[in-house]
Amino acid sequence: MSRQNDQSIKTRSIANRINRVWFFRTLRNFLLVDILLVAFMLILWCHISTDAPLGTHQNRSLSWDTTLPFFQRIPTLTYTFTDADNTLQTITNTAFLEVTQYGLMGLFGVEILVLCFQYISGKRTAQRLMWPLEKMAITTQQLTQEKLDPQMLHQLEDALATTSPLSPNDQLRTGNKELQGLEKAINDLLTRMHNAYREQNRFVSDASHELRTPIAVIQGYADMLSRWGKEDKTVLDEGITAIKSEAEHMNRLVEQLLFLARGDSGKNKPVFTQIDLTAVIKEVYEEYQMITPDRRWRFVGDMPVFTTGDAGLIKQTARILTDNAIKYTGKDDSITLSAKVKNGVPCFEVQDNGIGIKQEDLAHIFDRFFRSDTSRTRATGGNGLGLSIAKWIVDRHNGYFDIVSREDFGTRFTVMLPQQPLTSDKEDA
Image (cartoon, rainbow, N blue to C red; front, side, top):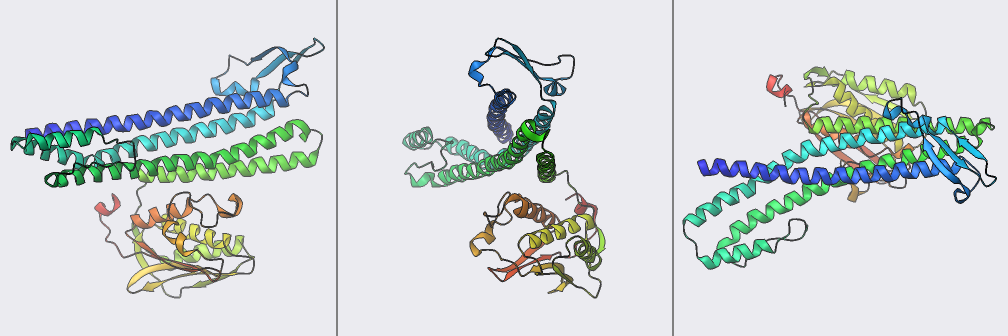
């Protein structure tokens, strides 16, 4: 027992070291990207602030108000240089720099969020995935006590020496049938670690990609405003509208990332009460009937349908599915919301007659940042997190989805919500 406890401590220590390596590697990459982004912003600002080429500037310098807190200094940046006529020029552009500052602060905030998510979830994942290695080590100790053939141990040692944990396709092979159980334990561990970190890195990469677009758009319109916005009211209105829209998109994305991060770390705890699904879905129906009158709305639900759940989260799921139905249907198309009991299970449905979902995409629609129709813009296609949030909510209710979809005929999402007992254990789940 003492040896097993010692091995458990060693395994947790190894898992923590692995997690720290990935954490600091991600932090280093973020810092490098941030430095390059700030440098690009400064060069771009200096370039657009004057009509003269950068090569003609002499005695160039940047300065700001050092009496202010660090993140409040950016709008006070001043670019000073001597032009070709040997005249000292001083350039400021508070509006552009303020927009850039808010963009950078938003980016830094999301990076911190992603790092926290990676550290917390990575630590738990590494410890869980290291369990086969701990079991393997205990088995190895037992095998050693049984005085195995030295040749067999040499084979295992040579195979371990040639196996790289960084290669996704590399697996342990000793060629000895008596070590096949040990091989399988190690290979299963390597496979699960590679899959977990691949998903984690994909999430970080996708989040960074989604944020890069609104920041680029904000920066582009800020450039346009700095050049022509003061004289041209049309340009000014267009720029302000676009910047506001992108800021709202970035805010929605950050809120969705925060929701998923809190959910993965166990901080989003549903509050379970008895609810009437018919009343909840009818509220959603009435909301969308008012705000989106260009669809033909229909509600089906004459009788109360009772279940236990978090009314706010279930309504959020219904809204996500309804938003998707709106995005993938045209004007005057039909969208039906309903609540009923199906096969003895309370459920609600959102059905449309839109473009449908490709069969090969059905297995991936709940993946984070996945979009079935990649040709759609962010304005009409969302950012690919809505269904991931809906899946998280339904999973927490021990529910499941029943999806029927055909291309060019439409899609029906049925959310099955089995009746759950109201217990404190359930609320803490």
